[in-house]
Amino acid sequence: MNAGGQQYQSFLAAALRAQAGHFANLASGDGLAKGGFISGFASNMVPAGRFGGMTLRVSVTPAEIGNAFQMRSARYDTDAMLVTDRASFQFGYGNGAAALDGSTGFAFRTDYDLAKGGANPLLGLASGGGYIGARTMVGDRLTIGFGTTDRMSRRNLGAFGIQRAGSGDWIDRYAAQAQNVSLAYWLGAGITARANFTHLHEDAALLGIQSLERADLQGGAVTDGVTGGFDFAIGRSLMVAGSATIARTHAQSGQITTNNLTSASAELALIKSRLLTHSDELRLTVASPLHTIGGHLSYTSVGVVDRSTGEIGLLSQSFRPHGRLPLAGQAMYGLALPKGKGELSLFGRADRESQLTSTDSISYTAGAQLRLSF
Image 1 (cartoon, helix red, strand yellow):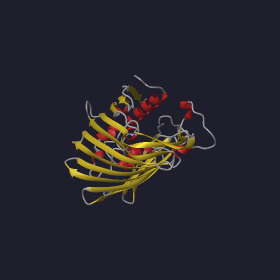
Image 2 (image 1 turned 90 degrees about the vertical axis):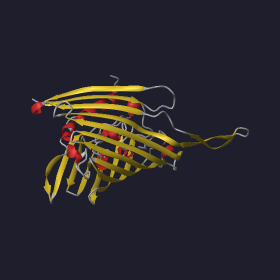
Image 3 (image 1 turned 90 degrees about the horizontal axis):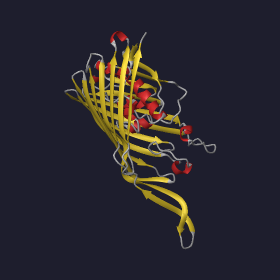
Image 4 (image 1 turned 135 degrees about the vertical axis):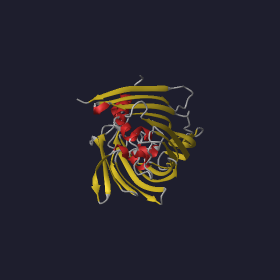
């Protein structure tokens, strides 16, 4: 196992915790409901009563620590959903990306993680704080949803040996907000087609990247993206889901500016419940995390513009941040022990990161977890 230090250990622990209890809920078939109200995210919730003809589903789970971020003061994610036959209303503090995306096949945080998954990384960048959203059916097949989510995280600068400079907080603070409109159309035969339109605003960053120099991205960046995907349920124990996103980023108010900067991501998931027993699940995913596919970045700084006279002025340098296509394969297996005695989780992952050079770099992560009840 190549853990890659504390960040990989944190990621591995989070993946195993997220898997525990998830596979049994998907095996129940709740996530296959027509209309898309009960998504894979919502299937982890527990019914908690009825209010005015609406069913309340709630979930309280341990909060996860993002790579190189500090644990927030709220140690738990709290999610709630009110559901009727033709509408749903969800709100909470935590995994807003999965709640607003609504796909049955993509319910894990890693699916929306900028560096780990490819479902809708724009929502993932703004996920972790408060969120609110709603869906309603229009006719018998079309579901329309909308929502908003935000995030304010503190970076663990000590992990990089970076000292905070000055009195500003742009270095250790990452803040983003996203609004989302979603469409889901039930085609029949277990197939649901999906489309999402996401508007992301990052306060002092560009696609999750920040600078030690405040002037570089002082105005932040705005990214608009379109996500298309599908959920294909084959019976009650097999599902195939796909998602692809293309986005355009605009930043023009700092020393770093963009020119038609275009990025893309994609993910394909296969979920098989009842593989060996009635209480297990295997989940296989192949993802290409967010990467640039077009456009330029420009950096403007003060320098010598005329070497013959030594005249000082503004210099603009442009480059294309295009590297090798990043790929990641992941396998998760979960087994619930008989009579509620515990759970067994197995996890494996291989990552080929995007590089601006030809150097081949593949990292591996693997782990196992056994939980027993006494």
